[in-house]
Length: 64
Image (cartoon, rainbow, N blue to C red; front, side):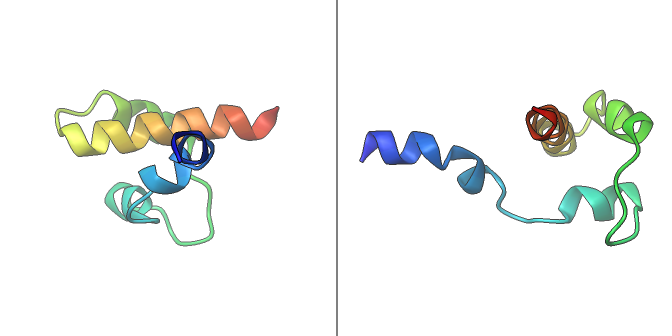
């Protein structure tokens, strides 16, 4: 079981798809600009900061 949960950790992390996009005011279907992601990653709001950091990480993984 532990090995399977490691494979799907990203699926478990994304609880509310589109929440960060809504917070940042980006229309559905558009990419979140890097500048907005960077600003959100330095936010005082912990949840927003976590979501932005995950988005940055996923963006890096997608390029490989």
